[in-house]
Length: 400
Image 1 (cartoon, rainbow, N blue to C red):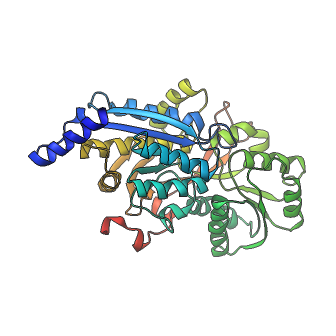
Image 2 (tube, one colour; image 1 turned 90 degrees about the vertical axis):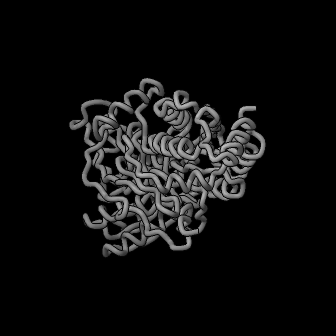
Image 3 (cartoon, rainbow, N blue to C red; image 1 turned 180 degrees about the horizontal axis):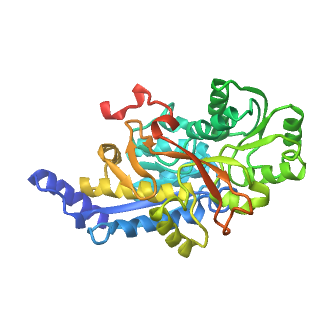
């Protein structure tokens, strides 16, 4: 009944030339992610908490906007994610889908969202294909992608002397994209790839793969994986004495919750690239404390990205007076000058890529850390223009 009222009010506004009233705006958001598997800690319920915080901080109810949030577990399977997405758009009246870690799922969701004129606000998936080969006018890619990770960690470690690389690659879209982007950066900085192995996703036992990497003579073992896979690989590399023998690990995608799970004795000295860290400034600390009070853990960059992309989306919906036309909402987001408390200045390009700073961090030692979530030293910052790939002309939907 609410949705019908919103449609009729907007139609009436169009006929009379009057703007739609804010109290007529109904919005339904679906947080689609891994809630029970290997990526549950980096997204899961924490992303739902972040979305709810965005609605509260936007003061949606005070603006007359009725915003509902639902969630589901895609189990890291594209077929399950696709079925949920179609149900949400066709039956449940969802306007935008949030988060979606696991690139194979996110790519499937992006296509369905475009078909249904809904919106994908991606924060969890890293494949650059979302704004390149499979760019869509209804996709916004917030937080990070594999090119930004490569331009951070890959470049820094190669310049520091890690010239020979061996990749342990999660065998799906994200892992292959991360290996491909990092290889280009390594080679551009005078390094070479001496080998790689595709690792089934997910994996508990990395022993045979790590032994191949150990025997390769590589300076750096690049972990083109994420979440529990990354944690398991690092733990087992330490157990096998690989890092103690002189080879370095490149955690090409690692989150604060992963570092926290490993502990400083295992993770100290690791270099990693993130778009957000809870202890960067007063705004990130204040927001993160609220998140911690609700969720029981500090947020990572994916959860921060869910919050920030939701805030920007709601602002665009408010300005348009409706959430019904996903393509129009994303077009409005691309027009906006965004200053976000967690990501700073953000500009959404014509291809849907959100440009913002990325940061290179090093994990603190146990002696340096002053508490269980005091994890990083910031080494450098990278502008969005430097971190992310250039936009393809055919993906600039502002010209179409």
